[in-house]
Length: 203
Image (cartoon, rainbow, N blue to C red; front, top):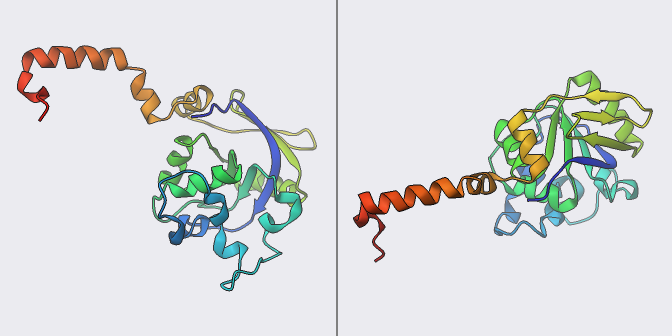
């Protein structure tokens, strides 16, 4: 998994509350287990009409947001089902930072499994960043310092669990964290073969 120490990018606004995972990536795009190619379906039902025509008013369809990598969203972002395709689709677009007042718990944790930083902030601070995003402004985020720098130079600080912070800084997903204990795992398996040889027989 890629490390995320700091990030600087164009912010896109999504000023909607209760954006669920089906809105982020509709069910018809869940047939794949690959993490690539899902940007096509990101916010599909908000980006296109049922006939497939582009909805020009939707931010990600506007040219100034084509390369956006920071998303400023409304309350309770990522609610609904636990589909991991939602962070996959956001990452495939290029989003590395998502800022909102609150997130659904499962979505929040899934972001860290995919090297995306979800930042929780009070509504008044999100409103400031939403105003920046409405101007397609560039904002800078430091995971290490736990800060956001607005275009006007204002610094906004955010809270981040120390364990989740370490995962981003070192590029560790749950598998990578498990492999940190590879020596202990191998030692246990060797001991267990002696204690329970029948449990290690291969059919």
